[in-house]
Length: 153
Image 1 (cartoon, rainbow, N blue to C red):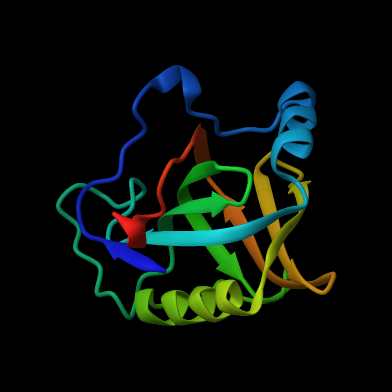
Image 2 (image 1 turned 30 degrees about the horizontal axis):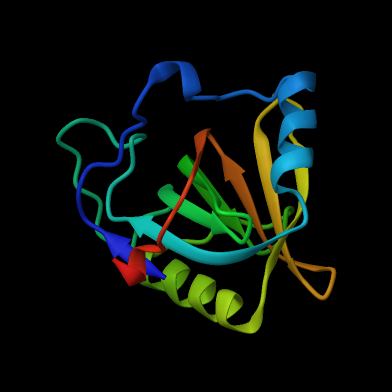
């Protein structure tokens, strides 16, 4: 897992998604569901932050992150809340999220399921041995191909 400290922005607006349509859901299930997570980069800032707002890393609750999958696709995830339990509170803290995600990736974690909230928002369910470990409630995303993982650059 790596932490990136520069601004994270989608390259083009047409590839930026905020709601899950039936067509987009089918595409996501086909292309990324069941893929092993091989890397993750968490950004120090989020597009959801108010302009000029500084949030202490330990208090951060909304994250932008890049999720790298074994099939060489990665998702840029924006305004993402991270939950251990879908009924619980969102996790806080840049270091805490980094530690949890690093351990999961080292132990083996898969993007096992694509879910959708009542408001058509994307939820990615990361599992190990078919047991959910993290729920990523995503405010917006793009998807692209990757050639090298951030730690390998």
